[in-house]
Amino acid sequence: MLFYPQEKLALFIDGANLYSTARALGFDIDYKKLLTEFSKKGILVRAYYYTALVENQDFSPLRPLVDSAMGVAGTASTFATATGFFIAAA
Image (tube, rainbow, N blue to C red):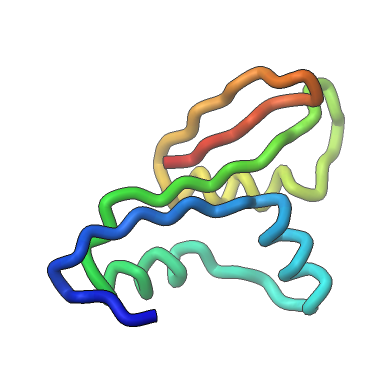
């Protein structure tokens, strides 16, 4: 994609679909590198990672991924939904 260097950018990542696609293709995503690449293209204002996690589930394959994304982003918001939690790491 082509961006102007002074252009403000925001990322909105559909976590469940990105995770499933990366897993199906057999690779891992380095979110820190992803943010760095978009920062080189313009002014990265925010990056959001959205996914749903089931409450009271001992293990979820998405949990390490969400923890990693939250570590990169530094903050996260949790919203209760009918099927679990909605995580927005900003």
